Image (cartoon, rainbow, N blue to C red; front, top):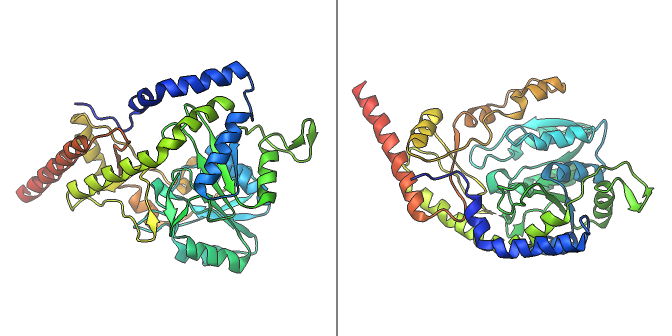
Length: 374
């Protein structure tokens, strides 16, 4: 038996006819950018997140970049975020002309350590980007309190957290703006690239719409220097089909995560869900000191795994080449040597999770036997 890390084909078969019908209609109309599908998706997604506005863009990276600029962030400014994230979070800050200031993470949620925020603030700090890593929200109340005290913008990096909740509020509705990725492996994924910005601030929403479309406020009238960051109609049509399934897909992920939590040995550090948060398990990430050995063991049993993300941003060559500071982030550096993503997707079965847990238990038992012999 082969168990992949992600299975996109099975999900596609379940919705294939509806997807193909929507794509066909979009092609028949030949209005391929910023048409009725984008508008419908924006309305649906804003309603889902609980915001006044949603602005469709071409990727999660562009969502972050555009949101930063729409919030007035630019050259000379500093933005606080984390090193344990996909590099797009930091790229977007640099692309906006600002300087990233990286802090360490909480060892339980792998999200920003809010106790380190205040000491990272300088006179140049203009925003905080908490990353909702793996589908679990950051602890937002301390972020909000500090942002209010220092007049800072909050831009949620919810690219992995469609539908996650903090104290009953959906991701994307808590800060000044929320940013989402529709990369094809996400809980709500396109068949290519796509992204969304959510906000309830009409001024931010208007600037986002202009920035994604070359700074236009009407055709050939450019008030800003923007980018080509539009969400296309074909991807919007696909996402519009998927939106009604999202709640069910999230519930299936949560059930699979519960099966993992119950079936994996206690020696494996499992993801935690805080009392104030709802985890949507874009990824199910465990920690083991012998990560490479476990990964090889599972691969030999036909089970694919992943690592998200083994090299923190502050240890990347790109960070050094962009003039980034040499940093010591001990929690980040420790956990990134131990993280391993196990298969999780709505079409995975509980029986397959049981098989994975059994093989992990066998690995642990084998290592214990070797330890006893030594």
